[in-house]
Amino acid sequence: MPLGDVWSGICRANAGAPHEPDVNALTEFCNMGYARGKCPSFPDTTAPDAVRFMIARDQDQMIQIAYVTERDHHPHAHGSLEYSRAAAAFPETCGDPLLEKQAQAYALSYVRRRPAAA
Image (cartoon, rainbow, N blue to C red):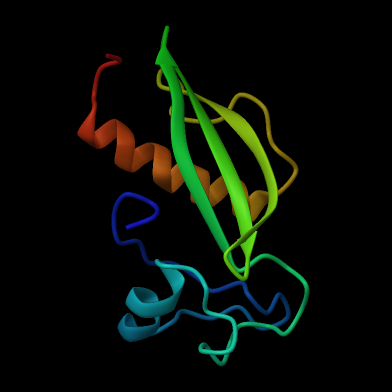
């Protein structure tokens, strides 16, 4: 799973009509990405259709998470976020609350698997 675990939540693909997707949509689209043209909730915009994360560093209670957003399997944007193990949060926001929420899900999955820094 791209976020480390299967997650549920509210679909915000259409900002004007957030809703809770059914289990099939969660498994097939929401958790995997690339739902454009497959999921009826996914808007036809130039926005990315997937986000991928990786742990770039884990030391001194800080986890650096690198990310890339993708559109049609090609890079769209990239960056990194710092996640505090001690606070279980990002000390600084990235300006994109949805990206940050997905990164937090990824961080929580990682911390559950690796409770202490290597």
